[in-house]
Length: 195
Length: 109
Image 1 (cartoon, each protein chain N blue to C red):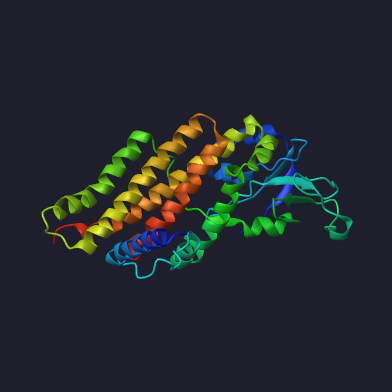
Image 2 (cartoon, rainbow over the protein chains, first blue to last red; image 1 turned 135 degrees about the horizontal axis):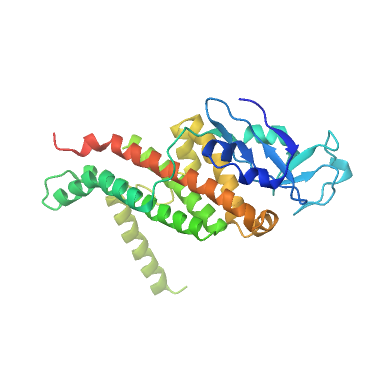
């Protein structure tokens, strides 16, 4: 994995990036002047970074929610840095920490396609729960099926929410739905493995 | 609190504990498993992805994210939103794949 580097370019450059790889490869981290981009080259392993934070210059003293003091001066002076609500540290270091592998994947599916997959995924689980009513299935077995069914339904619900938020250009709602999907995906994986 | 109120609360607590025991929960005061602990149990990759993604997404969810969004502006919000959409799509696909892997458990033998 190569380390990120920063350079100045026009914001229009970013809009030319259409593919997923390029989208994640170039992280738009704007200076308040609107020109600073952080680019993050990714290799064959699809290492991507999501450092969607505010970028400030070290030379600037004012930041969004805090003000670095002279006693906490950051070096090297004059280099761009990343500022978050809790951290103000060297760009390289924080960017390296905030990287994670994202396997190559297909473009997002349409809502109809995803609904089809959801139905396919949940069909065996629904069958188990239907059989439970006849008393043919052990209780623990159906509890597991029910848990997975609920998780799958919540996943679908939040995907729909994400799609609508994205189409409606509601960034905070999109982030909220994505964060829900993140937690649900963790729980789904966990519940699949730990019965 | 009167004696009657105490008795009602005590009775309700006992009832609740009984329901919990029947559901396999021995102690109500037991701490629930946190998401980050579940992610850690899945392995270092999942733990790292969860930690990084969660903190970044939270910046846009929390009311303070208004400040962040102000910086980006509408023309830059769209690419970020596209990024979130891609991530969300990847997450749901991965989750569904995991469920599909346990399908054989539920199929009749």
